[in-house]
Length: 256
Ligand code: SAM
Image 1 (cartoon, rainbow, N blue to C red):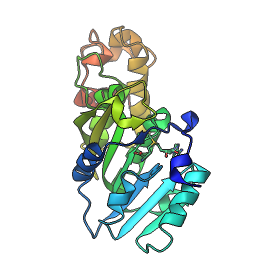
Image 2: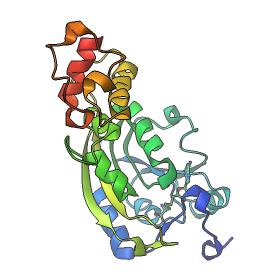
Image 3: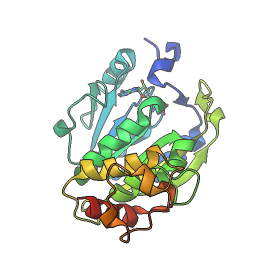
């Protein structure tokens, strides 16, 4: 198939980057080095891939769309530094390619939170990530306490990485043009967490429970964990959105 004949699949979040200046800007942010191993999620028609293939010794492409994966396999048949896996990034075994230096991509927006949560799980073996995601979602990743956008993902993100919103991208640079705006975000993962948390699932659960009823005071939203003996050990009148990462760690220690 000729790449020009490809019809974008909405179900796979296919919005292809077509603006050379933006592509070059993203490549600059990725800052590929020859000796790095880079994994690209959803290379699509190769907007970023074309530049990366010339810049790193080890590039792995993971593409779910059978037609596009086939195109990429043909294109890079002779390139020893490029390999292609046809598969779903949420289902392929990440152990086969870790550790890596960078995980990058213009992500399919419908699954970007699941992809990021998976990156958090494997953070010890991924140095950093440079991704394009929905702008709203990017703002939530970097949101500070007491702001409207501050939520579960903002707290997770502070625990697992330093997240930076680098650049907002206009809709017009994609084909088809998406309904939502986009942003480029950098995640630098913490190899070692700031706190010793033996039960991360429980830590996550406290955060999720608090935000499930974000308008309520913690005494109520965290009612399932609260006991009278904790009365003077925290300000229970506060709401989920006022608590920073340190605060959630305090709650975790209290409830553990
Ligand atoms: N990188 C290309 C670009 O910037 O023009 C395409 C980006 S497009 C927003 C998202 C890409 O991810 C598409 O190529 C799509 O087929 C692919 N994709 C969608 N779901 C995927 C999944 N679960 N695993 C891997 N790739 C996926």
